[in-house]
Image 1 (tube, rainbow, N blue to C red):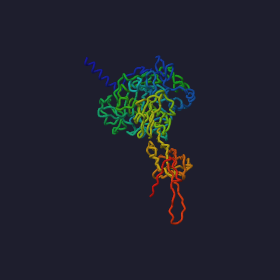
Image 2: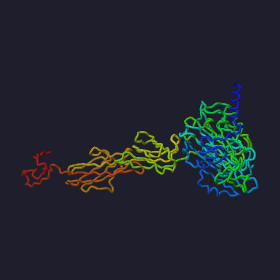
Image 3: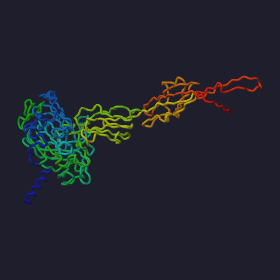
Image 4: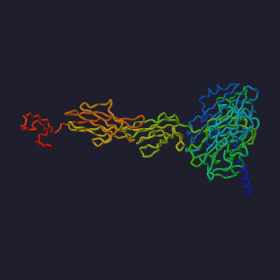
Length: 611
């Protein structure tokens, strides 16, 4: 019994570094890895690369166009995306991304294709910096190393994004299947691309040409980086699986148990003195599937290219030409969702490069490549912010609404944020997971931001912002005064106890004016722009109603303004003392009444006082 356990542990450790045994076909989370490209074959209800009757992950809308690219003498490269929107759910499987790519090759030569983009020189090896050491040239290749078709797909089991296993499904075809083919699917975090000169790469990463994984003191994943899945494809089997991640060499110790995975036995950088390298990850063989095509296996609906066909264009794959593999990143412990504070979209990768190399040695000479292709880059769901209304004297809340929302899946996560404003629910963040209700109400001017993401919990993308100001509210005012009297009041402290207001408290008193507005018909108006005081003087002896308008603005640029109406009722004085004129001889006393011509509208007894 003890002997059997020891043997099992020894075998597991050996397989964990690199499986030398052929991998079995299978159906990891409803995806067929059985050496064929169409759903329902051989198993019903399984997904695959192309649709038969169930579901295919590659878009076939433009099949006629892609067929037209195939010429017996020249093969044009092209890229096809997924048949779904990223982060769609299908049969309780979360779909991240899928691509098909046709690599370029010129078929003018007799038996070996001339490829316009292959690796040049001895510097093109795994562990080297793509930006510094991978060079490109046109040349010929062994047919088994010449990549033709490339497939990649990532899916997660379960309705929620972090509830199930994460699988990478991979496939490729080469010009022929003679002998062993050594293949790497390398996934980059940064947006690596071919340099404008066409003879090299750039933007591959800042850690010696890559992006490194990092860990906390307990070995938990803090930051994800670049990843390689390699394997050996033979004419009848897939074997020799190897998984590596780019790490700092000081983080690596052979056999070290990390938070969610275990390091293998070796790490390879560009040189022995490099600070970084690709470290092996212990691989559990239950996390792997692989298979190759039998003769007559259907090729893509736009056909393929291979050496066994005449004139090399064929609607089927030959024996062993098409190779499929799948690997469970969750089982291996390098699922990004296992990291500390992970993003639920979960896959911080953006590009993929597929390569062939000369031997089973990880650092052997690289030969052909396909890519870099955009892959697993979190989509930015575009939208803009619209307003249901504006702040006014009557409306003290404003509705924010989503406009021009990109035509995407039914589930879109969006979030409103502000640093200097306020939402109706008194929070500075308002969010909703579904597009059925795409509005939020705010109660304060400020700058508001719209963030969208494919799923709730994902790190979103800022897609729009808007600064909302409030115009001042010029409150209409009523005043009553006695004829021949003057009315003085300040717009910030109206006569009737109200005042002109602004939610931003930024009324500019120097802006107060009544130019071009309603003028009083029976008096004059003057404005002191220093104090905001308005003075109305009725015409002499005028009794009745008069009115005028004034405008106030705030300090925004451009300023927002409002117009107020002032209505003044001028009442007759209760007692009007009229001037008296009397003519007498010099030194003769004046005798008479000074109130006989005065007016008393109240008909009361008048008293006279002198000063």
